[in-house]
Amino acid sequence: MTKRITILGSTGSIGQSALEVVRRYPNALSIAGLAAHSNIDLLLKQIDEFKPDWVAVSDPHAAHQLSESISIPRLFVGPEGLEELASQQVDVVLCGIVGAAGLPSILSAIENKNRVALANKEPMVMAGNLIMDAARHHNVEVLPVDSEHNAIFQCLQGHNIDDVHKIHLTASGGPFYRSSREVLKNVTPEEAGNHPTWDMGAKISIDSATLMNKGLEIIEAMWLFDLPLEKINVVIHPQSIIHSLVEFTDGSILAHLGVTNMTLPIQFALTWPNRVKSPMARLDLTTMPEITFAAPDFSQFPCLAMAMEAARTGGTAGAILNAANETAVAAFRDHTIPFLGIEETVKSVMKTSTFEPVDTLEGVLEADREARQMAKDVIRSRSMA
Ligand code: MG
Image (cartoon, rainbow, N blue to C red):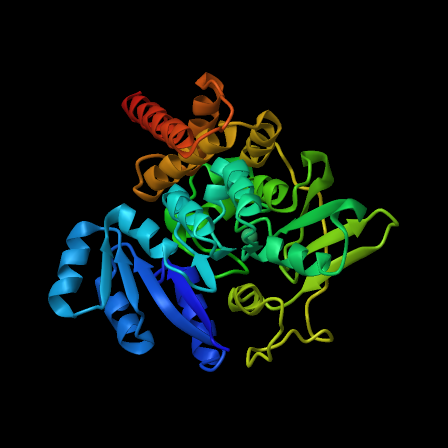
């Protein structure tokens, strides 16, 4: 039986890796739907190769361009188009859209009983309770693709979550693990985007440099595995060979090791509960570097501490943290604010925000909009100072 897959964000880093996995197994996996934002040139190539039944393009101008160049059985347009595509019946919807933009389509997939493979963590940080409540209500699995969470998911196979003492999320530490705060002041977007062990999209590379990525991953893990903050630990592991660990109540620790290639977790999520043979380069145990661990330095990377505080606060704190961070990262990439301006912006927005419970999608999207505006105001007043 061929599994039919829809990929949201097919032209991004995760999307392209997912298509590489689908390309490996033409008899087991096929593409039912593809969604992209505006990269029409690449999307056209993907349509030509994978022949999807449905395509969604969230940027209306780009959708128009696409419809002029090719005829597609069904083309869904605009942000609502993503939701429509996600609602079409398939075996797995893989969500690889960067940032908050992916949230409505994830809920749409779940409400239409589509299993979700979740690669983008922002929706979970914003509205993990809404996503997991919907998943329970519709009896749908949400499978983690984020490498750490996929590692934990693999370590948990055949185990009971009640037997977990702690999970240990590994962090490479990013490109500035050993840099002084003085050096961090002058970091450029190009330097921050250059991750030492993983080849990833631009936004997540910056998040890895501030360690905000690990903070968002803590919140993601709390929702995915239904664990309290106290049971989640972050450990710096610069070699990125162990992708995370689960420590059980009896003291046993299981770890997941592998090469740093996103096709590995993507493949496990797409083929789960089965494993299939991979042509990928393997980890060579006898030639790999020495494995080391260290505790994170919260004073060097306050974004990690702010994310933990948001996790403790709950409600819209996650959405507000995420919105402020997305806005600040975009401003840093535009050279509008310096690297340390990211943490300053997030700190300022978190300090002046009030937090509410997350009850509805509309409510959380409103909190997201307000926090983005607040972050823009902080950035504007900062650049005028
Ligand atoms: Mg990760």
